[in-house]
Length: 436
Ligand SMILES: Cc1cc2nc3c(=O)[nH]c(=O)nc-3n(C[C@H](O)[C@H](O)[C@H](O)COP(=O)(O)OP(=O)(O)OC[C@H]3O[C@@H](n4cnc5c(N)ncnc54)[C@H](O)[C@@H]3O)c2cc1C
Image (cartoon, rainbow, N blue to C red; front, side):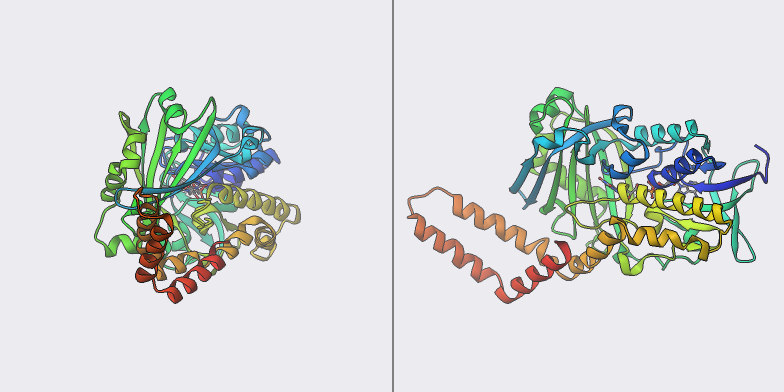
């Protein structure tokens, strides 16, 4: 490749957002270069591991027949932990065992991203690995190219798509986003633990390709704002924690302290017993919220995925992959429209926002925009209430010769003594508004 080469589009970052965009543009006949700083796509990426795939299934119908997905998630469990006990709610739906498998698969990003980028290459995308982009080249207020660390240097295009993930350094340098603050970030770390396939199936009650996702709140992260997770893969499990960066700093704890604490919990240690640690990684999740989204377009440039803060913060879903792919797809559709009109100005790219507004991406971001703020203002929902709930449940189910009516009253009295009912009612009402 010669330095200064020109393309229809340069895409920075071969994650779900960038690859979806590059693939769609190349399929439509545009010349596209996809720049990835890692040795291969996926080598630098961290994700809990649940791929939500309504968009991918539109881009590559029935992709699961060839993609390296691990398991289809048919079982979901939500738990509250105290220091040593657990309250669990679980569900399993047989319908999720049929295509499209509820569009929910566990994946390992190292394998999945490499496969997806290969599909993009087959569609005509030029993929360049170990291609770090340091700067967007601007000319008269328009993005016209990128400065890379490649030998051949700068690349030029009608359109630049920023899909660089949560660090969003390029978007930051262009002044497109607000300064990142701990209140808007979640710090995560994750381990991949090897276990024989049969052991995973037995411990999690699964058969064949079936998988489970388990989400843990309360004591799983020492009562901080955040949660922990376990997702089953074929012969590994992904286990991790994610906590408010602000809370982590305030409590002077490291992500490693939290993950070790989680793994030692009696409910967890039996699930991972005998497992071999294969991989450890740490990363951030953007939780800007709808009101703090960056500027999404400028002349010649579109921002997508995590770089734009498109993550559904609702702890029931933890959905980033589908939003990233949706924004990559809408960016591509907008660029194709702009090319037809030969107008790559910010005005010519207005269709991007329109597409996002009309889709689940902005609808969900708007719906759940108050979650972070709620969580930081109501820490009792992460520590005090979960601990009390478990204590009351234990009291209620402790077998004794006390007549049931009297033990029920004792539980109610204990609860009333420990909880300010007005505060609880206000908190529950706020939780309902921001979460459901
Ligand atoms: C621990 C954890 C668990 C998560 N769990 C889930 C989950 O279970 N389900 C879910 O849907 N979402 C989950 N998410 C969120 C999800 O991972 C992201 O929303 C999603 O990966 C965003 O995709 P993206 O393409 O925007 O960015 P990324 O996946 O981060 O991809 C960005 C790419 O750009 C490359 N890059 C960065 N800078 C440059 C540069 N300057 N030059 C060239 N290349 C560059 C990176 O190497 C990377 O490959 C999780 C996130 C974390 C951290």
